[in-house]
Image 1: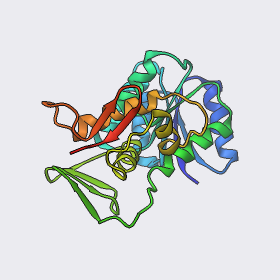
Image 2: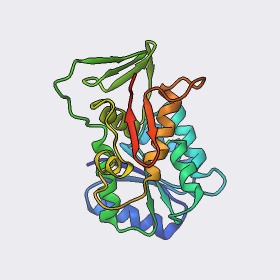
Image 3: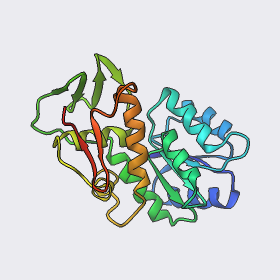
Length: 227
């Protein structure tokens, strides 16, 4: 079972989530501050970080940014508000998903499984490395390069790029991408898709020009190319 690092300052929420995941077989390490969570990363080596957005002193967004400086560890944000701009900030900082508190343990576990599945992208019969201009996509190795330089992508970013580039020029709605990439089969927050696209563009696009690889068709969705 996945090892989960839980960073949550509310004792009742922290204990409830920790006990629920432990009962389902997860190995869980709980921390109550962002600083403690960052210190625990190296020794505990979790498979996923479950991170409260509104932490004291060092916020969840700050923790997320620190983690993303050196790691593409899957991150799920916990938030008490489902409609605030702070969620968008958290997603832009590099979170792969978010959960609105309070949430049942089965919901949290389902989101954990969905995020981790994005790392296990299936290998298809395409060439080992696809070249799109200066962008090289190694589907078998799950790696991406621009101008020969390796680009570190979070699980959601990689899965989104692989999904879009598999069918160049086809337009996918944000709801379709939410279902296929995030595994949310119900109506959910398409801000996950928009935030992931923004992060992906900062890594693979030339900031001096308009989007070349991930294009927006207003009112319809996103597509890969044309190049």
